[in-house]
Length: 276
Image 1: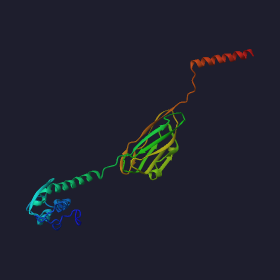
Image 2 (image 1 turned 45 degrees about the horizontal axis):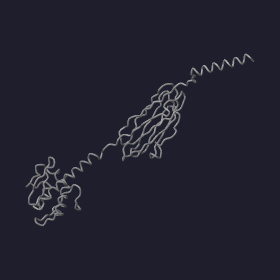
Image 3 (image 1 turned 90 degrees about the horizontal axis):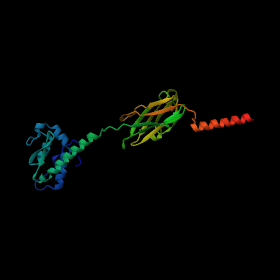
Image 4 (image 1 turned 60 degrees about the horizontal axis):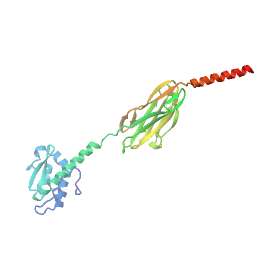
């Protein structure tokens, strides 16, 4: 675009002067693109009925009047844009229209994608081991992942409260809320069986973890569900769940053959004792 033609401007006749019989292809291309690259203000500010050949109240038509002998009309949606045509311009109509359509398509593309919302963070949870004896310990691991490849998530938060039957002991490790995620905050309160994590920045495709130790305090299968995972620039992500099974401690069992062998051994021991 020639210098001096800002956004919303109308190409001045002096910058696009065309003399029949002396037009060069490069001048035609440069002039036509200049006119069409700034068509928006021209045809939106003009009354629809006035944008027609022979009526020069439309700004674009008025700008084109000194440089053309004939005019045609091109429909753009429901609006009319005056198109300057000289004998030398016939071969360049397709290029001019292509420049106009391309500008519209690029604008529509940016409008549709500039404000695309980021995908939610994903949270998962597991216990290892998943089955423990009464008062046995297990490690709970919570993993948070940013599924957006090129978009970081900020202020990524989640919390977790242990259900009845599982006692929270302490944090054992993890990368959430650390320098790996731009800092943040981690809090844990074993007395209330609660902990929470806030990570300042989770980069695109990055995952972070929190690990805590727990104790199986009551027999049964205990379901533990986290909160949703939230962030500043994405919708909340679904909560995660995992189960910890706490079993009773059983003594060793003997097979029938082992019981028979034990009985025989006891009988021999008793006989030896009687002889003595």
